Image (cartoon, rainbow, N blue to C red; front, side, top):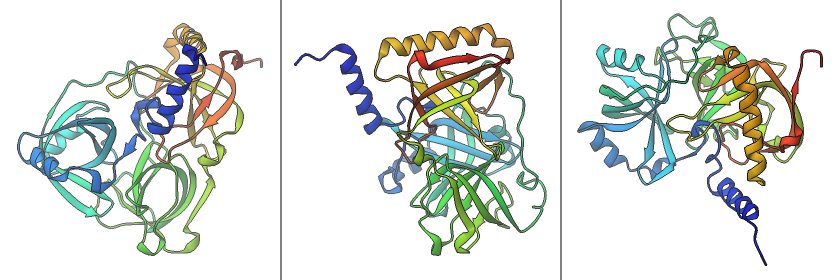
Length: 350
């Protein structure tokens, strides 16, 4: 039986999706985050306490004082672990606050274990590498009142609707996204493990924790109805959908070796998901998709706006039909499997 080149590419794409479901998704978030037992803790401790541990910045938010460092296994790019960074002294905090997303950095300090599902790095000093320049200005962040960590929480207990931003450990902790703020939520032992996927829309009743004072930490209230999944992203897998929204670009970066296109979707709660656009079955058609979207983008490049790790162009609205691919619990974004003939640019009159 003869296997054509495109058939071969399709097989490789399927293998990548099964073995490394994040190999082709924006910025590598949701690569296989390693189990705690699989991480070489002794070598990490030694590097932290001697020459420094090398990695990249996952995110820095001076307003909420959330600082996250990404370490990747030296033998496997797709194995990674996210460490919250805790400054040991004012000089270290000033250095951390000056860092940018995706910037390479070498940190020195020691490990701290405040929660069994999430270890932290106490940073005594660091050496920053060259910053990543995304190419357009960031319009700023929106932080919900009471979540910045700079002032007292409005109430001890709140009920909020947001997105699951990340999962840690064995269901004892997750990170929730509300507007541009992300904050950790600790699950009471009696409620573990919680079964969530990154990108789920949830409603949660949360209790503000008194410690640490920053960044703001929350505990899921202990009642059985304290957590409700309003829209489970895994339910979209395999579903054919027609989506319409602004064109989004995840630009190439230190963790992404090519531009990735997506369409933005906003739900009735004002929460945003980004569906990346791919045709894994036809490499030539994928090239046509890239060329079409790049052409539209360049013609209206002056209208682009920057987000945390992406650009949005409100001047380019598209309508696209395809089948959703959502294969990993920590997948950064859902993918819409499409063909170039199913992408349309929508004018204001339409």
